Image (cartoon, rainbow, N blue to C red):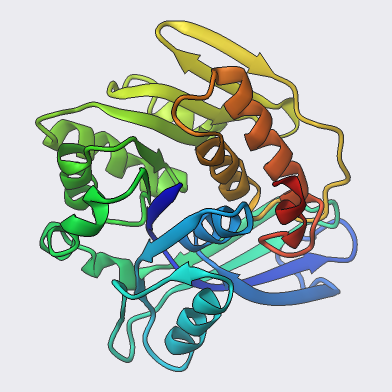
Length: 282
């Protein structure tokens, strides 16, 4: 498929404590730096799964922006319609994980994506119209997400990203005249925030170790998580959505859930945000 992914691309700095994390104290452990961002991670996973992927983003300014863009091109992600922000506009995510790989907390500085306005997207409408699917994360402003809901003619998948960003999807649906899109992916906390938000044909709610819940046409489907050894949960949700998109909009709920959970397992078993092992699932 030809897939357009719209969202964040940033530097991921992941710290993992060697033992149970102690708040308010310095914890021995390891620090790993990689390229991340929800949109970029989804695009990376989809490229590994063999799709033709174009990433629409504004890379952070300074020394990292050009480096991340070059890294995207090297792994087969198109960036010809993206931009690099001016110096001083950032795109970073710093996370702290416990020894068991679970997230203790994180800080996201995603000011670069504020420039992805409706007019910025409108200039790229021919690209969106040529895609078989569009994926957008909630790092974009609510007005931009509303514009996408109103203008995407192919299936649109939205990712809530975080509790801090999930409200943008609520606002986007309220602003949009169409108010309908194909799929929403969120975690349990984000799902509670968006429980009464209409518009999605399918709602995928990641329940972590408890698996995946999918809602469609008033029906609720539950799928257990696959057995795995968790090393890093950062990126698991991004891989989940990539697997769901890979299955295609015509896939059954069960088939899309199967692909999502397979990709999520690969991701959380890897110390990296994106696992190259996902390519073996093709």
